[in-house]
Amino acid sequence: MDKKLLIKIAALFTFLIAGCTNHQESRKSELALIKTSRPAPIELSNRPPNRSIGYQVREQINKIDGIYDVAVIEGKKDVIVAYKVNHLHRFKMKKIEKELTKKLDNEFPEDKFIVSSDYKIFLEAIRLKEDLEQKNLSNEEAEKRFRKIIKLKKEMT
Image (cartoon, rainbow, N blue to C red):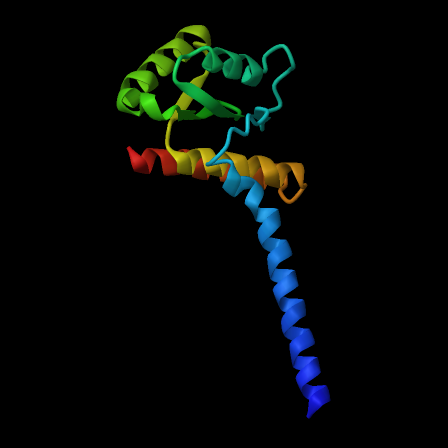
Protein backbone atom coordinates (compact mmCIF):
# COMPACT_ATOMS: atom_id res chain seq x y z
CA MET A 1 0.00 0.00 0.00
CA ASP A 2 2.81 2.42 0.78
CA LYS A 3 4.47 1.90 -2.62
CA LYS A 4 1.21 2.62 -4.46
CA LEU A 5 0.71 5.78 -2.45
CA LEU A 6 4.28 6.93 -3.16
CA ILE A 7 3.84 6.25 -6.87
CA LYS A 8 0.60 8.26 -6.94
CA ILE A 9 2.23 11.15 -5.08
CA ALA A 10 5.25 11.11 -7.41
CA ALA A 11 2.98 11.06 -10.49
CA LEU A 12 0.89 13.94 -9.12
CA PHE A 13 4.03 15.92 -8.32
CA THR A 14 5.38 15.31 -11.84
CA PHE A 15 2.16 16.54 -13.44
CA LEU A 16 2.14 19.64 -11.26
CA ILE A 17 5.70 20.52 -12.22
CA ALA A 18 5.02 19.89 -15.92
CA GLY A 19 1.91 22.07 -15.76
CA CYS A 20 3.81 24.93 -14.14
CA THR A 21 6.58 24.95 -16.72
CA ASN A 22 4.15 25.09 -19.65
CA HIS A 23 2.33 27.97 -18.00
CA GLN A 24 5.53 29.96 -17.63
CA GLU A 25 6.30 29.65 -21.34
CA SER A 26 2.93 31.08 -22.30
CA ARG A 27 3.30 33.99 -19.84
CA LYS A 28 5.48 35.94 -22.27
CA SER A 29 2.51 36.91 -24.38
CA GLU A 30 0.26 37.30 -21.35
CA LEU A 31 2.64 39.83 -19.84
CA ALA A 32 2.53 41.84 -23.07
CA LEU A 33 -0.82 43.26 -21.95
CA ILE A 34 0.54 44.44 -18.62
CA LYS A 35 3.98 45.78 -19.45
CA THR A 36 5.64 47.48 -22.38
CA SER A 37 6.99 44.84 -24.74
CA ARG A 38 8.18 46.95 -27.73
CA PRO A 39 8.23 44.06 -30.19
CA ALA A 40 10.20 44.34 -33.40
CA PRO A 41 7.99 44.65 -36.49
CA ILE A 42 7.02 41.40 -38.19
CA GLU A 43 7.55 41.21 -41.94
CA LEU A 44 5.49 38.53 -43.66
CA SER A 45 6.01 39.96 -47.11
CA ASN A 46 8.96 39.45 -49.39
CA ARG A 47 9.49 43.15 -49.96
CA PRO A 48 12.95 44.37 -50.79
CA PRO A 49 14.73 45.96 -47.80
CA ASN A 50 14.34 49.46 -49.22
CA ARG A 51 10.51 48.98 -49.34
CA SER A 52 10.12 47.53 -45.85
CA ILE A 53 8.26 50.02 -43.67
CA GLY A 54 7.78 48.24 -40.32
CA TYR A 55 10.49 50.09 -38.41
CA GLN A 56 9.57 53.42 -39.98
CA VAL A 57 5.93 52.95 -38.94
CA ARG A 58 6.96 52.05 -35.40
CA GLU A 59 9.13 55.18 -35.14
CA GLN A 60 6.29 57.40 -36.43
CA ILE A 61 3.87 55.93 -33.90
CA ASN A 62 6.27 56.28 -30.97
CA LYS A 63 6.27 60.05 -31.59
CA ILE A 64 2.52 60.30 -30.92
CA ASP A 65 1.63 61.49 -27.43
CA GLY A 66 -0.35 58.92 -25.45
CA ILE A 67 0.90 55.75 -27.16
CA TYR A 68 3.41 53.73 -25.18
CA ASP A 69 3.67 50.41 -27.04
CA VAL A 70 3.10 49.28 -30.61
CA ALA A 71 3.15 46.03 -32.59
CA VAL A 72 3.47 46.19 -36.39
CA ILE A 73 2.82 43.29 -38.76
CA GLU A 74 3.68 43.98 -42.36
CA GLY A 75 1.90 41.76 -44.87
CA LYS A 76 1.98 41.74 -48.66
CA LYS A 77 -0.64 44.46 -49.07
CA ASP A 78 -1.80 45.31 -45.56
CA VAL A 79 -0.04 46.50 -42.43
CA ILE A 80 -1.55 45.84 -39.00
CA VAL A 81 -0.72 48.43 -36.36
CA ALA A 82 -1.81 47.50 -32.84
CA TYR A 83 -0.95 49.94 -30.09
CA LYS A 84 -1.54 50.58 -26.40
CA VAL A 85 -2.65 53.94 -25.05
CA ASN A 86 -1.60 55.45 -21.73
CA HIS A 87 -4.37 55.24 -19.16
CA LEU A 88 -4.85 59.01 -18.99
CA HIS A 89 -5.33 59.18 -22.78
CA ARG A 90 -8.03 56.49 -22.98
CA PHE A 91 -10.76 59.13 -23.28
CA LYS A 92 -9.14 60.36 -26.51
CA MET A 93 -8.73 56.91 -28.12
CA LYS A 94 -10.90 57.67 -31.15
CA LYS A 95 -9.05 60.91 -31.76
CA ILE A 96 -5.68 59.16 -31.42
CA GLU A 97 -6.75 56.40 -33.82
CA LYS A 98 -7.99 58.92 -36.38
CA GLU A 99 -4.79 60.99 -36.10
CA LEU A 100 -2.62 57.88 -36.38
CA THR A 101 -4.48 56.53 -39.42
CA LYS A 102 -4.28 59.89 -41.17
CA LYS A 103 -0.56 60.23 -40.42
CA LEU A 104 0.24 56.73 -41.69
CA ASP A 105 -1.87 57.15 -44.84
CA ASN A 106 -0.06 60.42 -45.63
CA GLU A 107 3.42 59.01 -44.92
CA PHE A 108 2.92 55.67 -46.70
CA PRO A 109 0.17 56.14 -49.33
CA GLU A 110 0.91 52.87 -51.17
CA ASP A 111 0.07 50.69 -48.12
CA LYS A 112 -3.26 49.90 -46.47
CA PHE A 113 -3.23 50.19 -42.68
CA ILE A 114 -5.42 48.36 -40.18
CA VAL A 115 -5.07 50.37 -36.97
CA SER A 116 -6.33 49.12 -33.61
CA SER A 117 -6.00 50.01 -29.96
CA ASP A 118 -7.74 46.77 -28.95
CA TYR A 119 -5.73 44.62 -26.56
CA LYS A 120 -6.89 41.41 -28.25
CA ILE A 121 -5.41 42.52 -31.58
CA PHE A 122 -2.18 43.53 -29.81
CA LEU A 123 -2.00 40.18 -28.02
CA GLU A 124 -2.61 38.23 -31.24
CA ALA A 125 0.21 40.17 -32.92
CA ILE A 126 2.57 39.31 -30.03
CA ARG A 127 1.55 35.64 -30.17
CA LEU A 128 2.17 35.55 -33.92
CA LYS A 129 5.63 37.04 -33.38
CA GLU A 130 6.43 34.49 -30.65
CA ASP A 131 5.33 31.58 -32.83
CA LEU A 132 7.42 32.84 -35.74
CA GLU A 133 10.47 33.24 -33.49
CA GLN A 134 10.04 29.73 -32.10
CA LYS A 135 9.68 28.39 -35.65
CA ASN A 136 6.24 26.93 -34.86
CA LEU A 137 4.68 28.41 -38.01
CA SER A 138 5.36 28.17 -41.70
CA ASN A 139 5.00 31.28 -43.86
CA GLU A 140 1.61 30.07 -45.12
CA GLU A 141 0.35 29.51 -41.57
CA ALA A 142 1.64 32.92 -40.52
CA GLU A 143 -0.18 34.52 -43.47
CA LYS A 144 -3.40 32.71 -42.44
CA ARG A 145 -3.05 34.02 -38.87
CA PHE A 146 -2.36 37.49 -40.27
CA ARG A 147 -5.61 37.33 -42.27
CA LYS A 148 -7.41 36.02 -39.18
CA ILE A 149 -6.23 39.04 -37.15
CA ILE A 150 -7.50 41.37 -39.89
CA LYS A 151 -10.84 39.56 -39.91
CA LEU A 152 -11.02 39.83 -36.11
CA LYS A 153 -10.41 43.58 -36.30
CA LYS A 154 -13.13 44.01 -38.93
CA GLU A 155 -15.59 42.04 -36.80
CA MET A 156 -14.91 44.32 -33.83
CA THR A 157 -15.78 47.49 -35.73
